[in-house]
Length: 528
Image (cartoon, rainbow, N blue to C red; front, side):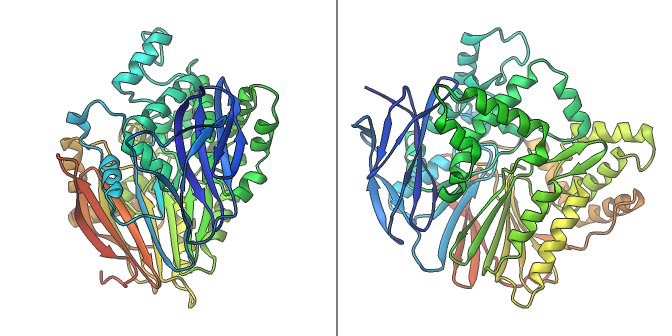
């Protein structure tokens, strides 16, 4: 009997369609409701993305998964899986978070907020329309005990990359462990539409920090297998489900993989190589509308331009695409990017200063020092790509100042292993940076103290002055942190209801129960 290895994952749900993704142990026909898809094969692993169509708006349908006619899901003891299609109203809930490290060291990383959320949802709590995972779904460079045992059985861990992920095969095991380690999380992923975007640990810490970092990492013989396996598996496990049915219908790689005779691993590898070598030719970002709410998910990792002294978070075409999406006629604009767009002001100015220093603002000798600081202190957020930050902030301010602008603009992010809310000043439409991180990966105490120190306004002035001395232009956007920081394992939920928007953060306690940390309106003009 054919077995289900990973999944089912309910991915993008449109006005009348839903995509269900699975991995199986052998080729087979996968049936969900009245839709059937045959598996495709990549490096000996078998996958299917079943497109369910003609769903009614507002419908709530229980489904099963059958492989070659044998029902294999739901498993005994788990609730039924459902496909809920958004209705015609303007009420939407998006639950989000980031940074869910592998299980096995709860005494270090703390309890799992996603598992706690799944259990509460199964008990009948309010249902989200979407689960958005904004980075570090898997940790290729910080493997857990079970993953390490798998690696040791395959190769000599005394040779690089040691206990880190080496190739596509190891990535498949990493995803399996991440998405099946908890039966209730597995059920959650089967019954709440889930969208994703990668961050650095999905590949490696500080991935694409700078041109120097990229040159140095590519000099390692093991890196090619890592990056090809990482991007190829990301396309299969994460990106395919981010696309709508219409977008997948236009995707040349998806068609090539489905039409391949036998194993399509070589096709996926070729794509992954091009995506790494020519970042400005591949778009991982995507956008979906939910009624009058637009969600734009921006890749802030793989699409960076780092060559010949040029630094950009997005290439010109992708930046123009993001700007066009931001200017749409919507009531609520949500821009999700794994890296916070608005950091605490002190950190923002220090990162922009270091970018100028590493770029030679104060000479070659200090440029080398700036690069060492950049890599050592992880100074590689939007602030460290000043031109890209300014271009996008100008667009957001333009949209916020339009007479027909949206009711709210929310920037959703993770990465930093703490949560907060930052408000932008002096805009007719409120702009808010909402950060929720981590789901399971506590920040050590020494780093918490550093972050708390950066929140004090006494450090903002000197950091800003240092950036100005290095030639960094003044930012057009002004903001201030109004809530947080909180250093809990947590999830957050953005709630849109007509013309209003709000957010609620919830942390998980040692008994794996969720409790509210704070909540805030995102559609009222803040007084800063």
